[in-house]
Image (cartoon, rainbow, N blue to C red; front, side, top):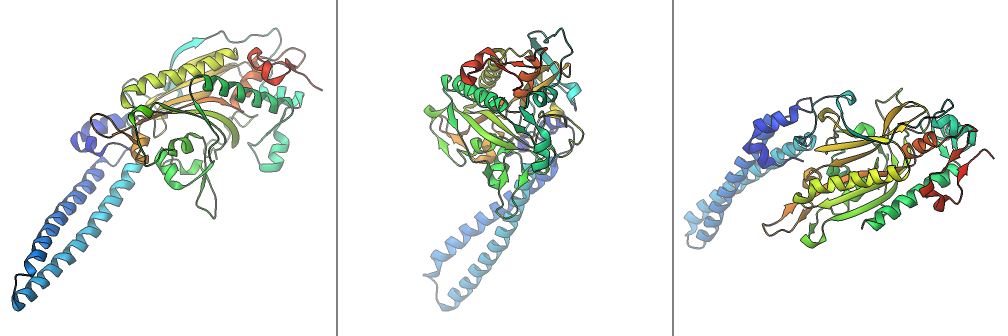
Length: 419
């Protein structure tokens, strides 16, 4: 969440910054609830001090005076109880509103409200060309018998799929290769829980704003995560970290679940946008001064993986209106998909500054006292979009697919052909 002190001290600047996202946010209501809460707390402190003095005075009073003083003290206690209820109500109202306000976009984030307003930063590699008409990943995968969306739909509904045989091995090989890359860079591998409490979802900023995108269990009040960012961020919920422990970098390997509400008719073909997929996620806890540098580092790792897979791609600075609530800045990498003849997002990397840390109450000891850490997240690889891009960019005229050279030591085969 945003720093309440910042809202108090410069509400106009906060309004102006948030206006870049579109929509309206209850800044005036936040200030009013905060004023009520602070006024109630100040009066409570005054009355408690007065009651404390009275308690000390009781022993020095005679019966009639003592009776009167006891009545007065009871009246003070009654007033304190009323004010405590008012303070608690104002605090709850304030917290509810703060949870609904997104992060302030970084000044380098371009204006705009849709994908069309995203700004291309640069391209790496030339779009893959063939001397035959390239197929999309679903046609390739079905012909090779390694993707089965028909049985996926029969088993679970639309936007579910099976990766089979060499397709499953291709993903397992990619995920292991990516883990080796991250291990060499000091990341700690994690297989986190994928069912989390509401506190974890709220703490990372996915609730209450994205509730319609999240699967929830009916009986246990637990949520299925759409990314291991959630349990990785919650790893240090409520903790005070020592200065010499950061940066902390985790590589989360998990299944991810997304309802994809509101995306009906979009990317329904193949495995590009699924309700369930596998992902290797990078997550970092850093101090504030290292936040920007860490963002660049995670993006560089994402790029190194795409280059190793020999996938052409472009980097895109995501506009303010397309940022998720926790993100202050996000850069997407879009791989070239020959079957669609366009670039499509395969990774995203977000700097959430101290937004998540305030909600999670995760801080670091510094020479100037405790400070909130900064958190960042980035996609290393997925079983959906990365696999789709590999299939489309490595297809051959005979219908087979070359395995990227960097993965062959993991797959133990060089190509995938119809059995």
